[in-house]
Image 1: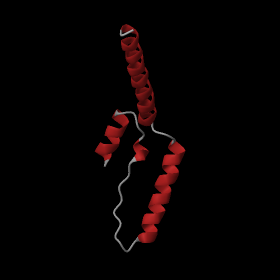
Image 2: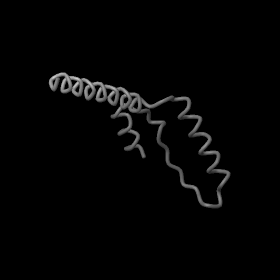
Image 3: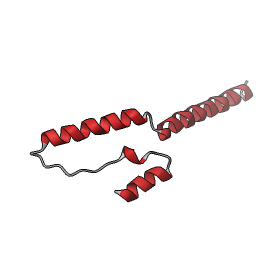
Length: 77
């Protein structure tokens, strides 16, 4: 688990975004508590930096493709 947390940090995410627990099928209340704690932790951390980077990269790729299409359209006139 520590290795995965190190990997998350290496790619720019917080260690708290991953956790592992062992829960049997008979421990529904324990699972619910864990899920609630993880939800609260993730909400406190906010959106991941990777998600924000992906949004920017997608917008840049779209703008580049549109510019290329405009250039191609202006050459064909």
